[in-house]
Amino acid sequence: MPLDYDPFSEQAMRDPMPLYAAMRAEGRPHFMPRYNAWALTRFEDVWEASVHHEADVTFTAGATPAQVLLGEPVPHAFTTMDAPAHRKWRGVIRKEYTPDGARAHEARFRALARETLEPLIARGEFDAYADYANRVFCLNSGYNLGLPREDAITWRALIDEIMHREPGQRGGSSPRNQAAGMQLGGYLYNYVQTLRADPARATGHTALYLNAEIDGERLDDAGMVSLLINFLVLGSETTPMVVAGALHYLEQHPEQKAAVCADHGLAESLYVETCRYDQPTNMLCRRAVRAFDLGGVRIEPGQNLLYIYASANRDEAEFPAADRFDIFRRAPRDLIYGAGGHKCLGMHLATMGAVILLEEFLRAAGNYTVLTDRCERAYGEHLSGYTRVPLRLHGAAGA
Ligand code: HEM
Image 1: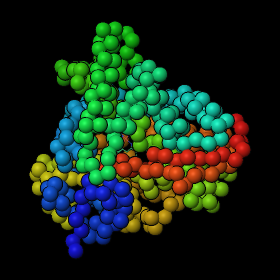
Image 2: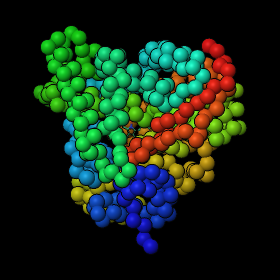
Image 3: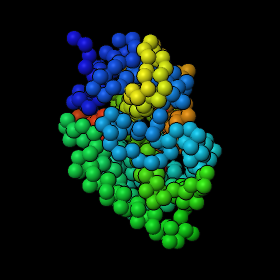
Image 4: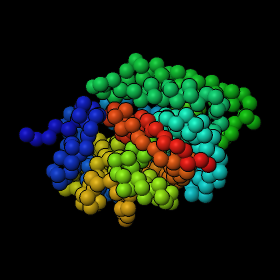
């Protein structure tokens, strides 16, 4: 029977890997008539589309499957612009996210990690995602935007509500999702108004974008709110899932756990392999504006494309024994952060922050056990990974 792949099906939202393997085995992009869309599941196809066909697709139709395939509203931010406007608006913040830009925040980020970890270590049992990694990345994103620190818990909860999917829910437009979106939008709108009334109070990314003028255009209130939501979500959603997932996967591979516990210098290899093995940005979408050939098929203008990174990073043709978790693997290239002109802006921050979180945990925690039967994964079409990884410590190593 021909494969009937639907990114919003129960199986795809719960455990898509067998579907991805089946589509890769087809040896070409997989067409989905109901969405007039091609699923790109092989490494080479996603790479080729990202690196060589940016000008043949538009980002303005959205980035998430719900936006591109279901027509949900598309926020007006640089992530959904095409070149050259994309490069100019992304450029406003570029310096903050270079390797040096990320390193400038290393000491502050490490202090945040230590301060968060200390009471957790004393408690002896905690969730590596909610209590630790997600909390630190949220506080960091809030800092980058100049938001009051005490508000982080509130906006964090709203983002969780926006992302929430009931079993079988298609896309993110349930009343629950919309109510949370309105509330977060209202909170950020008020924040923007306060800063417009008193511009000297604006800091970080918010100040840069409030003051930016490109080709005579400035961001209006809706543009500012979209931008801030983007930075809050992208800056706090994915990386913590990888940090929590890394500890989960170590538990399942005792030899690799012993190696990492003996040599914390392996933290980066652990992070990179967890990203590859369990890519948190399951997929992003684009729409073709010109005809082009890709992976043996002809893409027509108006057709949608799913760049399924989680599948590409498990492609045997690129990664020998791709389904094996192996922190000692050295891959010449990967699609962890995508590729091409829209390649992840936050990649240096994400890597640095994740490595710090893992190093600090290993330094302070000593021996630990993951309570595997209580771990939980994200459910939905867009993001994938662990959102709950409870740990029990067996006597802390001490600072
Ligand atoms: C594990 C961590 C992360 C992963 C795996 C990840 C992955 C990705 C991927 C695959 C893309 C699309 C790239 C493409 O279109 O080719 C992307 C875009 C983006 N990411 Fe990340 N990301 C991570 C963390 C972060 C963080 C911490 C930030 C902080 C702000 C961030 C900000 C962005 C932005 C702004 C874009 C859109 C760039 C553009 O359209 O120009 N990401 N990311």
